Length: 94
Image (cartoon, rainbow, N blue to C red; front, side, top):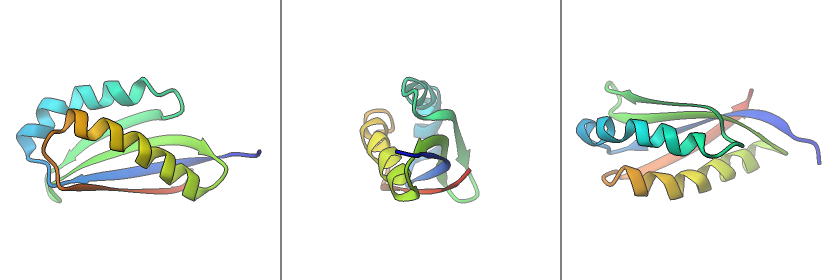
């Protein structure tokens, strides 16, 4: 099966700044444990009030890349960032 590389972005919405600041290192560490999620970046976007997560991954198509990262984040985020409203994930070709 042929795969392509995708840039996948996620926004964690409704996270208080204090909660995020306490969890950012743990979030980056957890993403780094997953070898199929390459070059993880996590940042606080104060203007939008969201945590921004970006990774690169290989998948057969955009929908699979989005689903794969959504599944990983659905395990990681609740365990580390105890307070959030929701998150959304979208992928684009790298």
